[in-house]
Structure formats: structure tokens, C-alpha cells
Image 1 (cartoon, protein in one colour):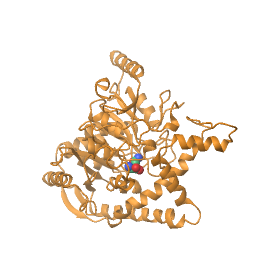
Image 2 (cartoon, rainbow, N blue to C red):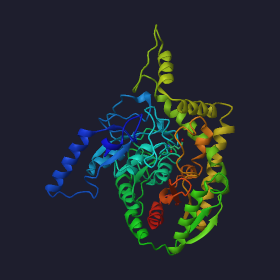
Image 3 (cartoon, rainbow, N blue to C red):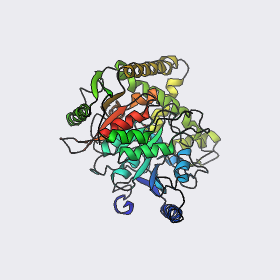
Image 4 (cartoon, rainbow, N blue to C red):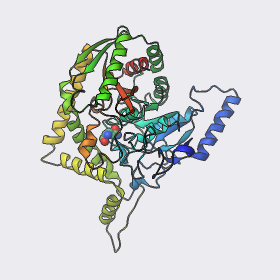
Length: 454
Ligand code: GLN
């Protein structure tokens, strides 16, 4: 299937940056042997999976969609990858992404864009467009993504797949090349809510190698998905977020969203409108905190330790090599954010920008806390529009950033969220996503309500 549809940077879905043909066949054969020998098997043993190229894979290239890591082969596995291997899932390869997970369209990949399988002139979402497109195009039954401001959920929405951002700390970040440490979270990209539950249970759970990993078990996600699939939501209180609708929201997205809300009511849920007034500042807050963290994280790409090294002619100093390498190795969006973040953290501006953003972040968490006193879950459309045309927003960073309006608050507050397919918009016949957000450590609620909509 990958050979038939994936193509390359110029044509085809281009979900993969690297396909591990030999490795995956060897792992599949090993799985067959375990089965033949009657060994106890994990439920997902033998089910192939695709991994976003921001998670380290021992012996397989990991580029983060950047030229600066071209040719780098990590010496160790991310915990998520290790758990996948230990359970016997063959790894198909590494999926395309916006460079260092910065973007909403996968067009910021240094290796060419991924195309939306529904319409290859459209974006697959981002930054994890490769994982979502691989699942949507039947190139992989399961995939793993990472979500810092929506990079699992928004690609899920625009490709008609299921995407989950778990509670912050519920899935280990060890071996996840950091974009913004306080926001990053790895999670499942699948075709069904039950698949996502099985996958989160596999990759999640405490990891002593990640100091922010939560040392507390979550309620059973598989049970929650099964319970939701019965279609009975009696007793569940659901809040529609007032601030995530109105001007700028595509009518076809809102129609499908409203229909899904009606389905929840039919399933017995009690639905009310809930206001989260600070959410209107979430985007501005995120675009200070994220660049601040990533400007610091990306300092390690100094031409000495990893990947690319550009040595200018003459007798260059270490600083000259560093400058030339970072200039050639980083794309425009990465440079933009490094500059923004460095500015926001610089002395004299720190309090006005970064410090202020941290205060607003607290207010956003309080909005969630207040809302979750009234309701069990909050819902909204996952993204304001369906998949836009490739190139449409590439020269307009603000228009690109606006795509993440509905997904960003969850990252700022560390709460879990799921995007499930809600049908196709009337205007363009493209997928619409429905988002369910729950309190921290209550990921099961996302699965229950999400499964009720399938
Ligand atoms: N699109 C958002 C950004 O550009 C989110 C990215 C992400 O979740 N990795 O930062």
C-alpha cells in the first residue's frame, strides 16, 4: 500500500520520510513465530505502526523534518518506541512532519509536504500530517504523533482519523525531541476510538526516565471506549465552549459539529453552554511560551553534536561553523520562532512577555477548572475549517497559527483531548473533527464520549 500511494516529495501522499522495509518484515516474521509457538501475545502484537519522525528510533533515521538532523541515527529508542517494540508491533517507518513540529500543514517539512489523501491538493494538517495521512490512506493501521498545540488532533480532524492528546505526563517524553517541554505530549493516531485506547494504554504509564511523567494509573481507557460504544451517555454532562464558535468558523464545520452535539443529547447526555473567557488569549499566550521554550531547546543544534555541519571556506571559527550550519539547517518558521522566543526571554522583555504569558496560562487552567465543576467534558470543533489548499497559508504565519485556536488551550492546561471524525462538510466534502476535552487524568472521559459518536 505504501509503495502504491506514498509517492515522494513531488507527488503522492508522501506520509513517510523513511520506510524500514527490511526491519518491518523481520519484525512481522518474529511476530508470526511468537504466534506459532503459542507465546502469550500483546493484543496489538503484529499490527504495524508508523512513528512520527520526532521520536527517536535506535538504528533508524530521526530528522524531525529538518535538514539539520539529516543523516542522524539515534543510538537509543524513545520510551514510546521501546514499548511499541516490546509489545511486538512492527515499525513501518518514520512519518513526515513540519520541521521540529512547528506548523499546522506539514508544509514546513524540509523534505517536501505530505498531501491529504482525501484531496491531494490539500494539506493533511500539521505538524503530524504524515502520521494522520498514513492512517487515512490505509498505509498504516496505527500511528503515533505528538501534540504541542494540536499536532495530533488537528491532522486527525482534517484527515477524518482519530487523534488523542493524552493528559500531560501520561505518556513519557523520553526520546521525544522537545519542541516545548511544558506542552509536548505523544499520543495515538488511529481509525477508531477503541484502537486509540489500546494504543494509549500500550505507550502510556509512568516512566522513571521522564521527570514529568505522572506516577498514577489512569482509569481503563479500553473499558471507557467500550462503554461509549454502547451509545449510552446518560448522566454525562457536556459543555459546549462558547468562545470556540462564531466568526471565522466554516459553516459546514459548525453544521457537522451541531449534529454531533445533537447525537450526544440523543445518547442521554446533558448538554449546556459553558464560557471559558480566557480562551480568546490562548493563541497569543502559546505563541510566547512555545517560542521561548523552543529557542532554548534548539540551542543544542550547534553543528558540534548532531547531524549537519557546514564549514565555511577559509579558516572558520567554531562560531562561524555554528552560524553557517544553523543558517543552512533551519527553515524559515524555525528561525522565526527562535527569534521570537529569544526576544521574549531577553532581559527587559521577560516580565512583559514571557512572565505575562505564564500568568495568562494560569487563567486558562482556571477556566478549565471552573468549567469542569459544572460539566464532565467540554466539546468544540477541533479546527475552524476543513483542510485548506497547499500553499494557501504558507506566506501568512498568523493565518496558519489561527488553525490551532481550539486545540491550544488543552496543551496550556495539560488536560487531555480527542478529535473524532464528525462527517464531511457540505461545501467541500472534506472531513470535520469533533473535539472532546476532559480534566487531567480523566482521559477515559474523552474515550467514552468519543466512542459514542462513532
Ligand atoms: N500548529 C502548532 C504550532 O505550530 C502546534 C504544533 C504542535 O502541536 N506540535 O506550534
